[in-house]
Image (tube, rainbow, N blue to C red):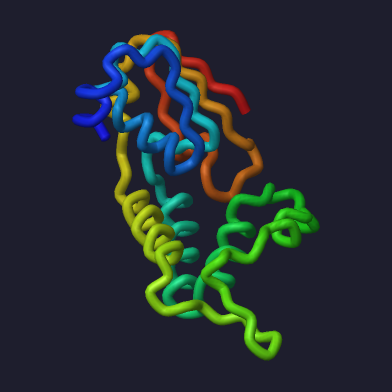
Length: 168
């Protein structure tokens, strides 16, 4: 992404990233986005701390052992507010297209590209660390996150000592 952006999009004025995409944006702050005047991260970690790694490993384990539906349920659990166990988030999640229904029992289609993308993305976040890029970034950076999130919270976000802002 760094090379592509440096070659194709040299004057980015605003970069916004959510979750994994936000982590990617943070990692590009010392490269292609170093001169971008404004960046917004939404539930976007700047590094993978112990809490985030535990959640990611749990989701990956569910994906490997029980399939995509179980992994999505685990993901819903980890992103729900800690103090809201009755959240309707899990109920509102759509079943991915890689889940087939036969005799009323869902199962995962082997070789599903959505499973591969989920596994790759979550695995990349396990050892993710964009703190050096974020700390060197001198322009405006706004990071929004849920204070009650079980996955991305103030423990997985490091701010710059310059004009960075943080909102909960």
